[in-house]
Image (cartoon, rainbow, N blue to C red; front, top):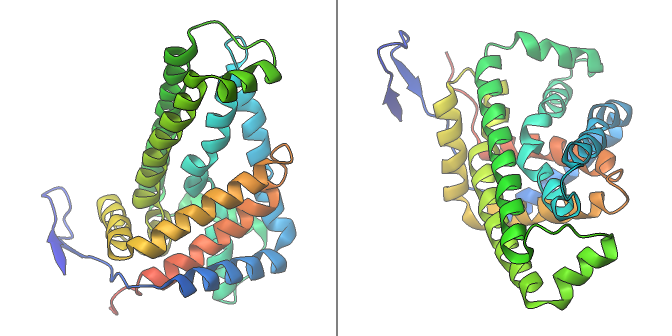
Length: 268
C-alpha cells in the first residue's frame, strides 16, 4: 500500500509499513523480553531513567507558588504522556541488543545523528504540548470545583476530594478526561517513535501507522494501555523512585511490542 508524496518530497512514493494483528499473549511476550533487556542492561537502563524522578521533582517545584497539591496527581499521570519520547534511549539499546551489537550507553548519543531526529523532536514537542494542556485542564477542573482557595495541607486536600460531592465529581471528570489524553498519546506514539528510529520513514507515515496498529488491535492495545497505567502507578508510589525500574522495563517492552506489531521494511 502506498501514499503519494507532496511536491516537496522528491522521493515520490513511500511504503506504508505492514501492521500485524497481535493477541494478548504478545503483550506478555513483549513484557518478558523487556524484563530480559532490563536484566541484561540494568545499569544502563537505570541511568537513563533516573531522569524521570528528577523531572517529577522539577515539575513540582515549577508549580510552587501556585497551589501545588491539586497538580500532584496530574503531574504524576503526565509521565504516561511524555514517556514514549523520553524512552528513545531504551528503544535504541533494545534494538542494538537484538542485533548483537554493543549496548554501551554511549551509543545512545548516536541518536543525535539519526536522519529521523527532526521528526522525533517534532513529535516529542507535540507530546509536551499535550502534557501542558493536560495540566492546564486539570488546574481548571480543580478551580471549577473548589475555587481559587489553596488546600492548606495534604489531609485537607484529600478530605476535599473524598468527602465532598465536588471532590467525587472532580475525580470522575478528571479521570475521564485524562483517559482521553492518554488514549490519544497511546495511539499516536506507541509505534511512531520506534518506527522513526528503526525505519526510514516520514513523521506522518509513522503516526498514521501507530494509529492503524491501535485500530487493528483494539483489545490488545487497550490492555497494553491499562498495563502501562497500572505499572506507572506502582512505580510512583515510593516517591517516584520505583519509576527507575518500571520505566526501563516498559521502554524495552515497547520496543518488542513494536517488533510484533510492525513488519520489516520491504527489501531493496
